[in-house]
Image 1 (spheres, rainbow over the protein chains, first blue to last red):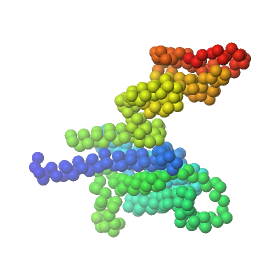
Image 2 (image 1 turned 90 degrees about the horizontal axis):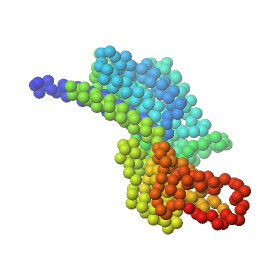
Image 3 (image 1 turned 180 degrees about the vertical axis):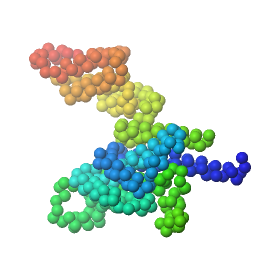
Image 4 (image 1 turned 60 degrees about the horizontal axis):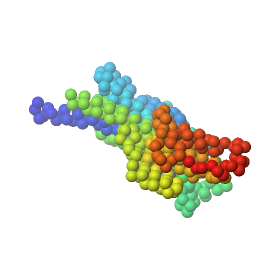
Length: 238
Length: 166
């Protein structure tokens, strides 16, 4: 085989490695870290399995991925692939589902009224999005913004409100905003600041992994499909 | 060929990773040390720290029961060793034994430990041949502590002061 012919082979091999090794590993890492919390009291690790509501939310998000053609199940699981490749793709899709569930788990308050307020917020947003026109790039941005908002609310605002004895800016701000409103039903377990860092890393990894997902496993790499500006992409497609 | 190998590697490693995640969420380790111990147990390479066990045994013979239990907990962090569980139960028995009354709370902890020892011995009769111990089988130790917890008229007998600690 000549050197010129070997180059495309190497590129194809790298793309396959990214698809069947890197992508599932990234998604599984999100599935692992999404439920990890560090207790404030003794810095012990807590592994919180995904609550049922996060599975429902992940189901809605998967439906959105399919509607927006970020993932085309018919292209991922197809008779044109071998059994081995289909099994590998099925594992990747399952990892995408559980990573989504754990990403929600990471930004949902663990208990109390706030848990249900956040869950309803996610449900409402995802349900509305089912009827909105999306392309993969817009969906990716929308998902990134959705998780960034929930992260800021949970790990910056609420953690500041409940953390420590002092009273940071968020505690003072929310106390002012909620003046006169009882906080009796807002009960959150106390977690160490490391939990917020873990969640940030997890969500970053999740969005990064989504950027690697392609509608068709054999389609060109994501830099020309998902990460380029919409105008450039349209020009490419034209 | 290489492409198929990459696919096989990706599939097998992903399934192994997923199994590891399920294991972590099932066993709920509370520290990285516990993760390591759990992984050793799962891999079948877990071993009790014999030096720590002996150190605990020395403390036990000097009637330093709490210190002995602490040492044994370090010797067997995964709590997988029937012999150590037996000694832990025995330490609760000896600490809880009294000439006039027994400490029920310690006896209950002892019963939990001896039950764990019996479960860990996988159905076989657990016997510890230690001349320092008056009760050499888990069944005897269990019966002794069970009897100690039960309230009977014989508890009021003055002859009870003649009982011996085993």
